[in-house]
Length: 457
Image 1 (cartoon, one colour):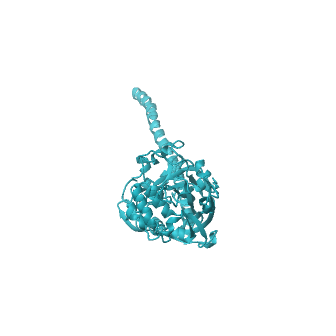
Image 2 (cartoon, rainbow, N blue to C red; image 1 turned 180 degrees about the vertical axis):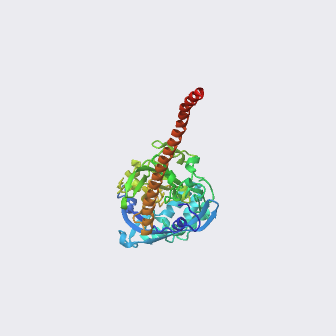
Image 3 (cartoon, rainbow, N blue to C red; image 1 turned 45 degrees about the vertical axis):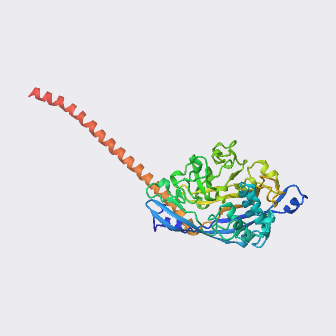
């Protein structure tokens, strides 16, 4: 399993034959116009989808440096219409993310600069409404929007945009800009596939402690088998969340051919506030001491300064205030859980599911009238995404089968051999000791006889 150049493990790692499914659920705001007109008090959302895609991953720009391996990821997501509930051309009402992001960043500027920005944005059609009607394809994979381009001189975000169109998943397809450096496990098996640098840095710069800034984690595909302990915590790095997330052992599960796997799940308190989970205190803002409510984490630093927050789907395990301000949310602990099923000998995650939701917080000022009807600080759910592995290719199934039973047979053979060796060694040792003890006794019996014979002579 060590990732050596031109080895089987390297080939499987560079171009995985497993194609995870990405299932996207979009929140459709059915009554935003009625709320704006004062006819409804609360926004209502409808969970639309899933829109299903298969992920085809290739690791590119690979470079070996001793026992370290650096690379970038190239993704190609293919739409699966037969597995989806809905079509790409379905229309949805969604938050105007470019506008919400720009106005949130502008809220910290002086009022004069805000007025200048508002005047400049008045020429853009999309700046007038807090919600947009878009086809699913455009919303996810990119649509033309000039708001960010116009706001660049005011917000100092030049150079941070690596895409031409705006879309929720626009940076997912193609080669990502993030560069990862992992340990191959060549010299230290317990560090195999563990991240050691992210974009050239050994730690993150975002949070208030070394523990929260740590990137010592796997990408969730392969773990060092030595770390697979029922009492140990595994970590998976999520670059889009600016942090790693813990997974703890839950139970053993059995798959085909009687193969037993170890299931590790994401703890339910992982997004809790510091009052309920003190380890999350370092994820609060250092200067203001402000902490998000229970159930969401701040990922603004990974969203070019837009007030983005992550949570479980439908604010599962979240503070009541997150759900009472919006109707139509239905959290479900079973369908919204996250877990990994890992082979205890090979360290490969053979199945699993990760479900996370992206949200945006409304931060407005009096200089911009488009957001006037929305409550200050309300957190708007945008979409939730489930990544899952539901079927393994036959080549990997064969590898897992032989990796399970051939290894078990080898372990059994070694155990029997050791027992036989131990038994034979014990017998030999007993014989040696017995012979050594017997010889002095014979000598003692002979001595008196010799003495008596000598006296007679």
